[in-house]
Length: 456
Image (cartoon, rainbow, N blue to C red; front, side):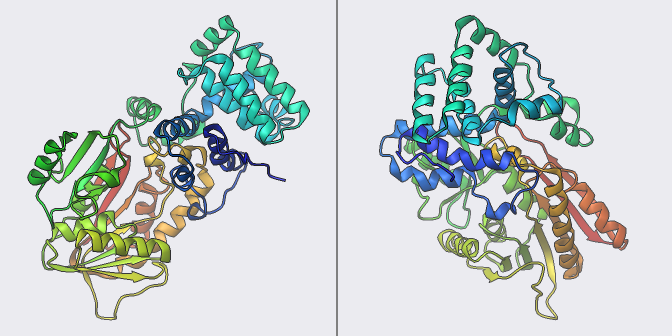
């Protein structure tokens, strides 16, 4: 039986949110990405149980912090199970299996939670980190053997001298697993990889919004923010994007949000529309369009003068796309709920611009969605690549001779990016790869990839 913590304390909620992630981390293969609930979705679902802002803040710090330091915490668990005999990041596969095999999945998560509070959550005293973890063990009905081991490992870790050594030793353990770093090394330099790891170590400070120029100018909205004493900074590469630096409420509480004056969208995502170069009066196709970030941006860029067909397979996401288009006044958008692998436009319909914002692993967003890295599998990226290539190949049939097709993902994985384009060109020699946009993860931006294709 999969025991969950039934009492809605902050730590119990964090446990319930993280338990599916802990289970998935043990699997070689996972369910399709769209069937897995993300951390932010789980928290959004469970947050109504809390009224106190400090409880929400604690749960967020605990869940995101653990997901962010997942692989360092894995190392700490191994050190602890090995009785702290050595602080060595390199355990053999057989030794790792030997140490972890007897450990219940709930005990593994509780160790993760206890270690995180001891080493990184400075607001929690050491004794409270251990006591609260043991209380949670009772709540989830952890068996006696695992409970004793949990107590022994955390108590040993909390000894002042050992804790100081642990903090020093873990600071040099990589935040990303070695196979993942090696996988990206062919695309990014060592310096870029180090910068991305550093960026993903901390939660983003602030968030991006795109001013909806259908309804208001960036300058006018900036005046509104100033009048509300909201700290922000403008974007140099894209004038309609503003970074909200300090805001105590949720993004939906920003001035003018409900009226459609602003849309929460990362700068990297917004740059995709700039790479597409949509123009007024054009016929534009947006495949895999929900939730509408780029769809509504395209509508704003062409000033609602043109026709945008937005295709989305998932009915629930399609409805969200519809709601966003209505809120933002994107009247030129026609929403089609259909599978991009099956749908076809009218026989004579051809497009000036096509955006294939393909479904992907999403690892470019890992600095604010750290669970994507925990669930990354090379085999899954390969499966995505097959779907991505098929969608791209289908879309290419519908571009006008002088048109522009943009393939984009929020992934850093070459299997989903460069390899897909190369495979497409190998089968379609009449096409040219004219532009590449590779945005690494930074402290303020998601990682994104874009490839512009035209016919020869």
